[in-house]
Image (cartoon, rainbow, N blue to C red; front, side):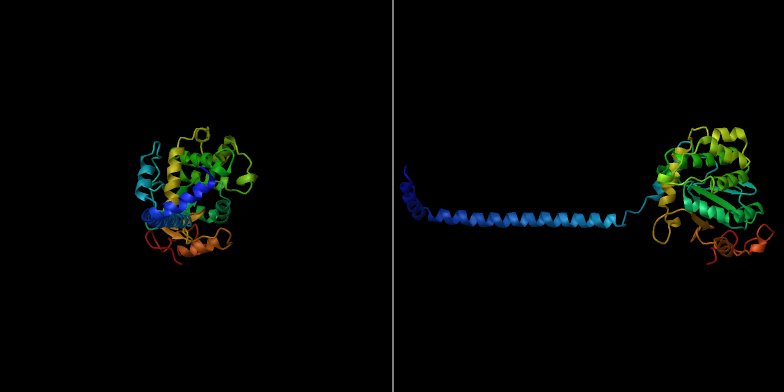
Length: 304
């Protein structure tokens, strides 16, 4: 068939098949409309999903399941017997889990590698120790390990595990408090990240012995076996998710201090932080280490 023949046939077909052409045209238009509609709906759905994802990533995270976190914390293997249900290690001059009546409990939330914890400890520790030894406060110590990855040798886990071992096997809590003081001294506490320099178990053991821990206990505390690692991880997860100890910005950070379970804002760089803490429990500086008891007692909130 020649080209002319084809061209001749076209007008003839157009004339005789007119209704079919109209039908095909209408169907084509309907198909185009349906395709557009489906595409629009899919695009809208994707946009909505993206918006929802962006909202979640900007801080509106689901509420943590604190009951489940508490269940995990208290059912983990090798849970320290002297640790409380929320992960704290409570002690007074009378011993572990023997709080003195009618005096405030100071909650200390610390991470062994945290530079601001070290800064705060070096500032307030002499006063905390005097208050503790005089029976003017109870101490509730919470250890977290979220900076462990900023060391090259599992430092936070080893230092915290050692502290828990000391609390479990040394009946004198003064030694635990002194050990925490020693690992936060400026010439011992390592820097985090790229500036980190490895710290051996023997070096940690030395700080424990200097704190009064029996060498035999210190040997096992820093033997390299992290028997409380699972509990520390569960305690870290519970503590860092606990809304009661989150800062005003809505997150958890160290150091954190509570007074009778109430969040107390602390600025580790403020040279007056010690006097502010004394004001919070209503005790004068010249009363530290004496017979006077803080007027807020064991139940009242800290004084602003």
